[in-house]
Image 1 (cartoon, helix red, strand yellow):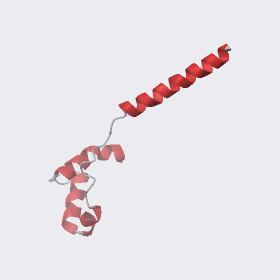
Image 2 (cartoon, one colour):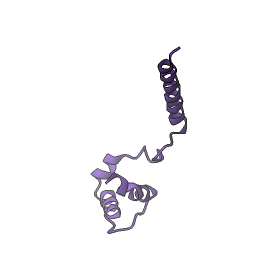
Image 3 (cartoon, helix red, strand yellow):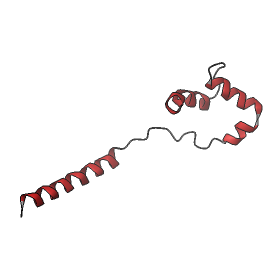
Image 4 (cartoon, one colour):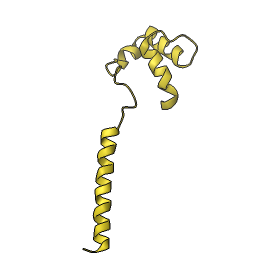
Length: 78
């Protein structure tokens, strides 16, 4: 067996191990806790829409846990 073939196989094995480790160690960056929020319900009603807007632009308090969560991650997605 040539040295090039050995190195190719070793590189392939290392790459497979790296991919497996990335899959195992991958972490969830954002919670799925609020995935069931009905955005259209918020946008179609003036009161909740204004509450969310005021919370996000920091002109009013963040009343709900949902508002607080999205206010925290807003700088990351803005």
